[in-house]
Picture 1 (cartoon, rainbow, N blue to C red):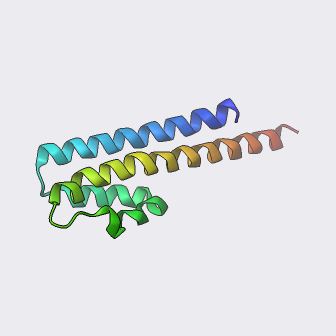
Picture 2 (picture 1 turned 135 degrees about the vertical axis):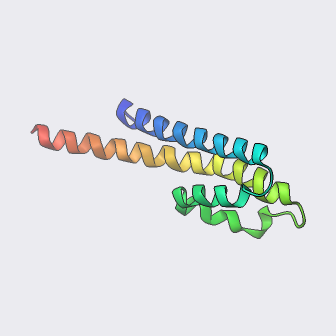
Length: 104
């Protein structure tokens, strides 16, 4: 993996992780009323990965804080950030290929 791919992946993953941390902080500060709406906005950004958020094995019946604050934060912070790192490395490799094609 070259520097272009790695740096693009790290930048996108860092932005995503920062966004997850900000949304989690807003959820903790604002209380329970905004939690599902804010995670839904981030689920659109993490589309293929966010399909696993509805998996019943991740839910705990009757535990609002786990289901709407903690679990989405853990899930999207790990798998969503990994997804954006991989997507960023792909975009970096594509960009390097395009630049190399036009140099010839």
